[in-house]
Image 1 (cartoon, rainbow, N blue to C red):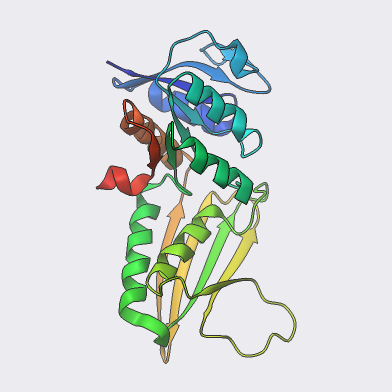
Image 2 (image 1 turned 60 degrees about the vertical axis):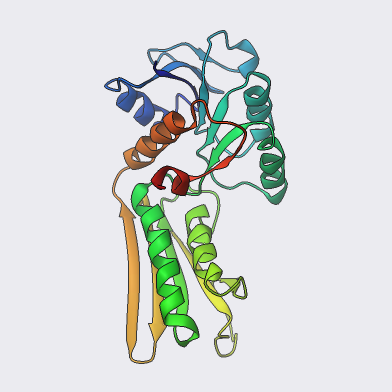
Length: 250
């Protein structure tokens, strides 16, 4: 039986990527879409979730962090899983997601790319081996329309490194002026915005006379659509809880 998907943000670029991939997928299908600016895309598209008539199993949400409460409530009330594929959630949003996860199957990760999630594991392993003898700096690059900084992926990578230090590191967003010598407890975070860069992340471990870098570059947004569909299939039939990419990998 196919996984039936409601695609939120259906008329955007990521929605288009998801629909393109689903056209050749024998295990999942988009039964309808929800978008603030509906248009003809080959499936029914509604402006509001209240207008949705189709039966579904999972929501893939590629809209934005704004209004996440509505999508969570719809998922809960209709017993659907939901893949939160956006970033830029506020602390209040994250607390709300955790609350809904008590009664709803929620898949949330800062990055849906398989490669980035492998990078996350590699960065943690490197931090465990290198320890405090190496300074950690994270550089992330994205297109000029991205609203949040640092990226959710950069924060995810920083958190992975910080796990190796029992959460003792502090995050410094860029540097300006006379800031003094670098503190050993810092993880530097640097955001670059320009052009149409899909997403590039570099974690640099700088030690005495040597530097180790772990990098990932997304060349197309389709990698995120692939991950979202994979997550939707994984979530189909799952019980309430918070899930992420490492649950799929495991």
